[in-house]
Length: 79
Image 1 (cartoon, rainbow, N blue to C red):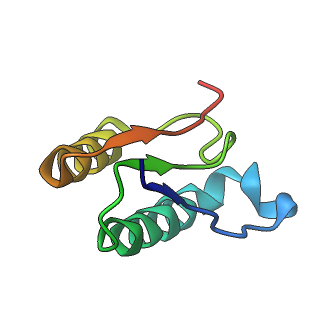
Image 2 (image 1 turned 180 degrees about the horizontal axis):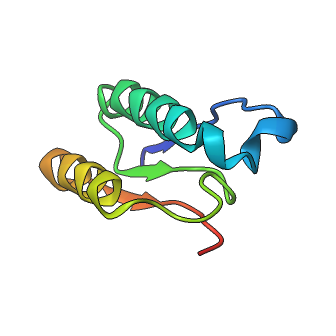
């Protein structure tokens, strides 16, 4: 099983800032695209990657890309 670990290296002071949610999501999505290029079976995001969860349209964008790549994904959110 090939696993791609996505680690965005976001400072702790920014993780829970609601104004930075879009930037965090875009960073994670960009890194996920790079990871998918390596052909993993599973993509793994950090346990608190998106405090507050994902907006429905962001979730659908991510889910669509993961389905397209035919991989599994695990990500964490507190919502």
